[in-house]
Image 1: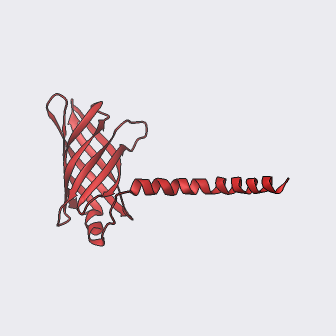
Image 2: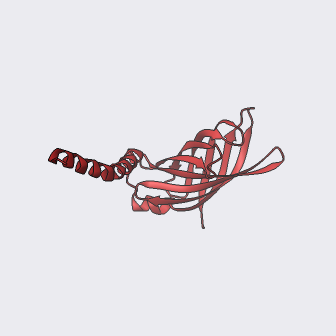
Image 3: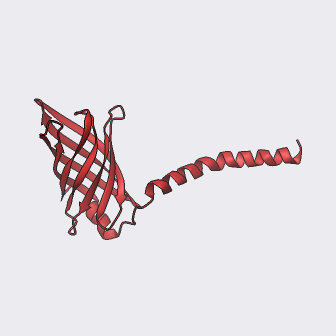
Length: 164
């Protein structure tokens, strides 16, 4: 093997080893773009358990009212959590569970994306919530695709901090 071939082999090996690391890092940087550093006071206010109510606008002009429970944690600039959305519709009790991910865009505005926790279920969307100055309420709106309604959905949500 001549020196050119050996050099190219070394470059290929290094590229093979480094590419996945750079890919993961690049994805994280892209995902976190625009997210603000979360001050300790906001972190303490946001982390924990939340309970409240969501109102989803139905296609027929009505509303679907739901009870919501959430658990939120902060990891670096990222906010992670789960939300349970329960309501009665057509004589059935419906319980939907979603995973949430996002972060603060501005001082008190939180942008979250969500997906159903069951990977086979098509349910996804995004929300914008405002954390109250006292750190005890999250209020905002969401838009997405509903697995139960099988249509695009939107609505409002109000959560209050509760003891876990």
